[in-house]
Length: 160
Image 1 (cartoon, helix red, strand yellow):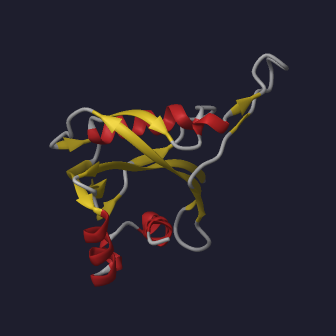
Image 2 (cartoon, rainbow, N blue to C red):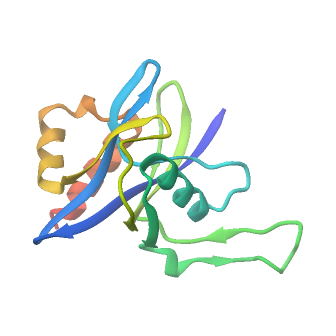
């Protein structure tokens, strides 16, 4: 199987401190810190999948997505074949492991109240980016295999 995922860096700024949402994946045999997001359904537009996954897992409603203004599509040109194209924040691809996947990270803003638990998620919370960097430095293996590289990329970009 090959999977395509949409994942979110949901950001907010409180008193000059940037925070993002992290959560704990709560599946049988899988407990790790991760970013909200998940697999696209067949032919599901990526921004719709991103919004759906964020809502299902966190209870938040995505209101802005960086890069969405770049979106174009071919809807109406050929009703049998439509394509969309847009600019994500980052892209990942697994190059070894039990699951072959690629995914797209988006920087977002969202509204609403965090759930206590979502769709196979618990411990949903806001975390300061500085604290995220400390957690990553202390034990990178506490983060999901997929999100580890994405978080490192995000932290590198944030330090610029």
